[in-house]
Image (cartoon, rainbow over all chains, first blue to last red; front, side, top):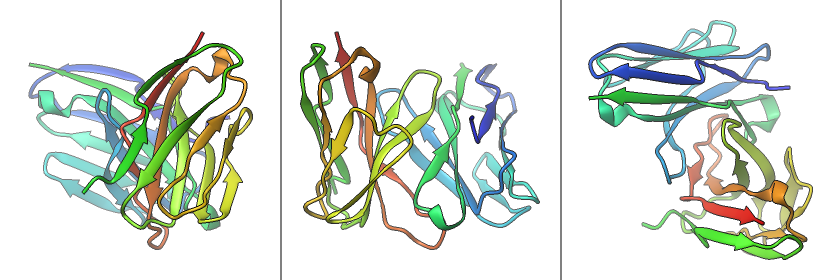
Length: 112
Length: 114
């Protein structure tokens, strides 16, 4: 059973377009993180959201945590080729917060 | 600042061979983890450690062993390698901060079992 479902699995867009990727679960998480992974590298943390309804912005990236803390979204405005990569969401649950559950990821390709 | 260092980066094993993936971190983090990443499957936790001398199983521990004799090092041992263990392995560490400890990952070790 996959606790965190990410969609879409693959996304290929042109430079300048906007996009949203989703991370959904039937479970409540105490916090949720988004990582980006480039080929041949380990994932790198982009953001952590902790409060239900929280919105965080990182330049052209906007992250939202659902009110019920079961889902999250990542919106990218005016995508650039440098945004290409695998986007992973990871949730922490209650007392086991040092063990993250990862989604399968969304592989984003931004074409110039 | 090296962060998390994994060796080797690539390795080919024959079925039944054993090997150790090395991981060291220089950030004085208490928490360390081993994940495996298969295509389209995200990251699966193999083992983790909350401090020197303390280890515990994750989601997919079968066929692996770990030890944590120092804060810095967390080696992963593969015994009797099988084709199902072909994967990319990532070591990570974190300094737990409230409920949102950031994971710092190494660059990965790509293992092929033939």
